Length: 170
Image (cartoon, rainbow, N blue to C red; front, side, top):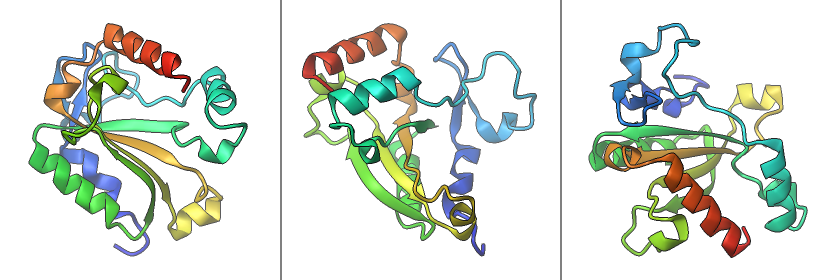
């Protein structure tokens, strides 16, 4: 498809979560709805204060190491679908992978992430359009999550993750 990303439409048949974190619907079924409609999760940028904290605490003032200012997740019902999407993304000529963390790997130390599991991709979009806009240097984070794990995500779990992260000095 010319200069377009093959990865761009991966989310169309994936699951999107409602804010209760327990209900999932196909994004393709709701993408045309009013974006201000209450209940849908929306992507947000990393808070400025957390970005500064990370630069000072973990990255020795090196902003090139900050890889998750722009982040989102795609939820998949099965490992097969998640794996298929991963293959499409990492072989997309418009994408340059910077880092891949496979937290689904049995060797992953889940105590370091308070039990949280996903496949976390950090990448840059490097097609002609991204270059013309000057955004081909920006690193994005995409979390590929299995629905069963996504259903377990809670505010309390995130608090435990933040506590573990802060304890480790990251």
